Image 1 (tube, rainbow, N blue to C red):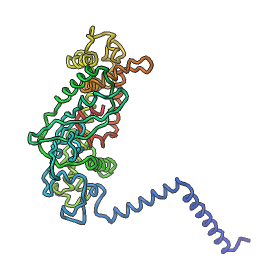
Image 2: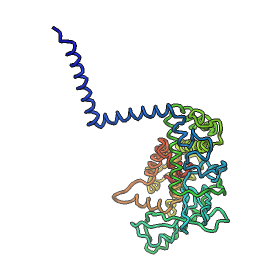
Image 3: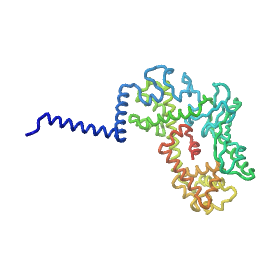
Image 4: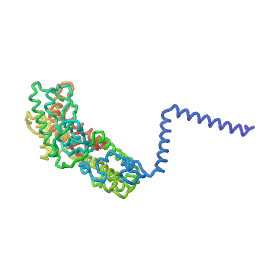
Length: 431
């Protein structure tokens, strides 16, 4: 006879109870199941919040408030100091799409401070309303006198000075920077002359696109926060399924950041999405211009990589000869095809064969390093001739170029570029 109906139901309930206890035990004592459960709970909560909320994550990052219509009541963001409450720019960084967000200041110090890689600053001491001018230029100098008492293996504090760009500024400020000494001449005379020559060379480098506009002082923490905000906007666009077309437009050579801003304002439900004059729209456009400039930099780098070295091109040949003169000024090159090229790390008589992987960019980086960092490059070349731990100087330099290009192509340098700028000189400084 079949078992009674109530016994069958009780057995089924006991089986269900047993399976439930097993699953609870797995969740409580297994971290994998815990993570899966928490992930589903997070997705459910995020879906419920997004369903009832009128704003999106991108609009919240830009400081757009759906509940308030006045700009004064909008949430504050790290980029607010770049505009006045009426929307007028207070910084030259707003109009320079290749400039980063980093600006140093130290009003209580009388030393000079560098304003990031590729920028110089003129700081006016005084009350809280002091202003700082930031323009794209390589004028950060290292004081040769601070190297006089340095040993070969010690680290020292170098005073960094900046060249003033405003005649009305009476004093400059600086912050100590710890750098590694590359060695010391016993007499100290020869090394000091090399240092002074390097200072003069670096001082001559400037950008013709510099601006004399003033900008509100931002300390290092605020500059990093501003770069982090742009980075978050970039990641939101990168992983958004709704903004695939806008992301492709930002990567295009003929990108129009203003039009992309209008499209994102509509798609992401910004308050007053039809207006570009709102604070959130200004900050979004500022961020999109920086994102587009990183793609422009990547295109320039890729173009140099794909430019193959041509032995029949006089400009290419002159740059190669310049590399030899910078690294071996005391030795005269016997000819174009000679074994002497192996002394600076090439593999054979013709260095052109070593640039097949990285094209002209490999030569550009080597020349930049040797030209603007003569002491460091000559020291690295000298170390490459060690009897035990030797290496090929030029080949290693080309491999470093390959690594730098790979990090740029995989978007691992986005935060670095947002912080320091997207000019090609910033890439060379990274190298």
